[in-house]
Image (cartoon, rainbow, N blue to C red; front, side, top):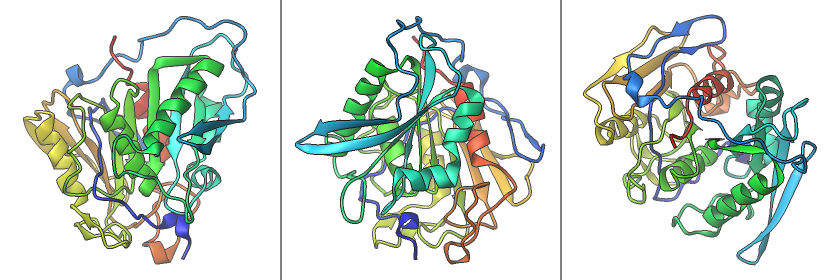
Amino acid sequence: MNLRHLTHCPAIVLVCVILGAGLVACGGGAVTSSSSEAATFSDAVGAEPCDSSSAVDLTSIELDVAGERRAAVVHIAAGVEATEPLPLVLGFHGFGGTPQDLQGDSSLFEKADAEGFVAVLPAAVGNPTRWDLSDAESPDFAFVDALLTEVQRRVCINPNRRYATGFSQGATMANAVGCSRPDRFAAIAPVAGAYAPTWRNICAGRPMPVIAFHGVLDPIVPYTGGTDRGGRPVIAAEEWAAGWAEMNGCAGGPQPQPSIGDVQPLFWSACAAAVEFYRVTQAGHSWPGGPHDDPAMGGSSEAVSASDLIWAFFERHARSL
């Protein structure tokens, strides 16, 4: 079994959410959100141009954090100007994985080139590699803080358009940084993440847009809850989404949207901060639309491209000033 698909998630898993308007799936199917338009920040929130010293050819960053050398792979969209403030997407790989594994699943670099953003893929440490989510002040959270600061120093980044995504335990990490650091991120997109019963414990209590995906046939993080492959308690994926709907004051939902193949979108409505969730009925622990279709992981789905839907969602959300 490929270790990058395993999810060993500790007892604290975090995320905060708001929902934007409709998304378009690959293959042409349209999904229209019934969420409150008031819950969507304008993506017109901009940033001042940067000086010409900003890098456009940076490919990696190394930092010393808590006495340990940490690294991240950087991909800046081709053809951008050094002074143009760009969106930033952090992408967290799964348990036992590498930044290259996440790139292989998500094709974030190609998406960055097509859409004009900066993709930064941090590397976890350990053997096997894993993200330390035991405490909001763990070295991994300090690494994310330092990495954001360093990228902002070296590349022309729009500070109102910083996002986080991830797969498996990397989705758990994306949830955690978005929930605990709402001042640093505009939206998050966890794919196949694990949500412990205590996932709300360290949330800052501020809204954070989220788009999430989970396969019903997931053998690593059970869709209906119980324990994950590492023996840790997890709640049902839809229970997690409903918890955010409750916290975000949603008056309606979940509202099923038209299915796209084996993908069933669920949107909450009349929210101060809404929830968008994609239930993949015939797939397991995988990135929808990605190249990996492992039967041992429950298979994958080609009905939608998670990467396309995620970026469309990110484009509609920016931090309000």
